[in-house]
Image (cartoon, rainbow over the protein chains, first blue to last red):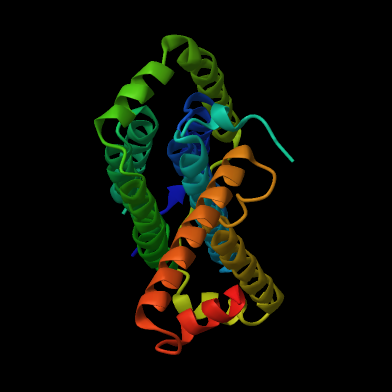
Length: 103
Length: 213
């Protein structure tokens, strides 16, 4: 039913998505965009796991993706709470504004 | 099914480029939804239907809804994209973009050297995934539950507005004296009302009057 795709193509797709997410983290200064780019990177690494799992026909890659999904959900909830705190205290979403630690 | 993989992969890459180049956060989130659904189609074409469903439900559902809630709470409006345009000068773009493109080229070259193993020959059913998840990986499930608990507590703690803002900050001092004076004014009003109404009409004024004596 399912035609075979070369595994390298799936890994190339995952690598492209990861690199685009990395560019987003490096370029953007808005904390919302930085969090979205981190989501893209986590999703791309999960894609690499699923591609590898489907190459061997084993469920392990999908299980790793489920764990990555759990971690991404936790990370984004804490990160968005931090974004709300940043906006509440400094009235901006610029991550460079929060470059000083105090106390 | 091969065509599904390649088309949805191209859509995923293009819409992800759209995510990191938009100025408006809501537009970027729409592109992110498209990208995640395209990746879900990639999963489906690779014979992983369970993970494709999870991708749509959790990523494109729950996580994007969190983002949308936060954007609505922040209420950015047009000045947000104006600030973004200021921040995104060519100088900030060029370096990371060139490095990232070099990284992509290296990845494509490296994976292109591999002999081509077919992926997605067989479908891995949700049943197999669940048996493995609650069999050899059950410790990971427990650790994921701990991680979710920690995330819950952390998000609850960080989401509190001005609870831990009070100590050791000048404006916090101001707000504290402000509330103190408010309280004093309220007390004075209560006292005057108690003298008007007479003692013992309410519990609060009676207590305040007793304190005064």
